[in-house]
Amino acid sequence: MKLQSLVLAAATALTMTTAFAVPAGTWSVAAGAHYVDPKSDNGTLDGGLAVDVDSDVRPTISGEYFIANNVGIELLAAIPFHHDITLTDADGVSTDAKTQHLPPTLSVQYHFDGYNMPMNVKPFVGVGVNYTTFFKEKVYLKEGTANLKLDDSFGVAGHIGVDIPFNATESFRIDARYMDIKTDASLDGVEIGEVDISPWVYGVAFVKQF
Image 1 (cartoon, rainbow, N blue to C red):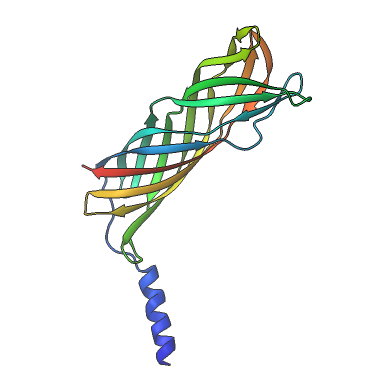
Image 2 (spheres, one colour):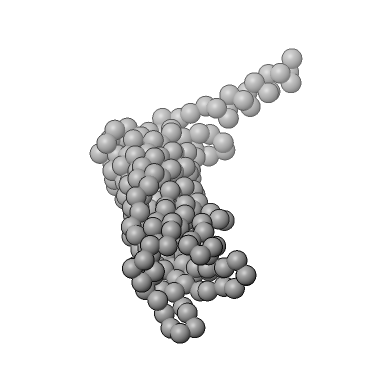
């Protein structure tokens, strides 16, 4: 009976929430860094060119305004991400390319009240839309560079994470996002297929509420 009571008390402690809601009208700013990890198979372009897009990490900043208790609208911004691209033909011969991109993402998010396990961590989930614009694209050929063009992309974005508070207005954030990023590619004005980047994006940040 004593053991059952201890188990029940432990389960209650793990599921108990505290009054830690973020009130409507609150602003928060998060500054940190995110690692963009593209999916492993990024598509095959005309001519049988397999595409491989590498990962990158850059500083990021986001702002969130709470339109209701625990419900916020967040905009994520970053300095440009840089990606090396490898194009490999059926014979295994590789050609190097590169691009830069900016992926601003707008999300609606719900922040759960703090959980005692063992500190008042605050999980959150969000869903929204990602807009990615590409620039400074290049393909490096033996005879020089070619004009690679990657079209801008719109797609759904999902967001999960947890805030670990230092005090009532400051916390450390760990989060992960999925971004549906697909872009039509052209070379010297000729369409050559679709590149599917669709990365998971992992981040850490310092969060301040106002």
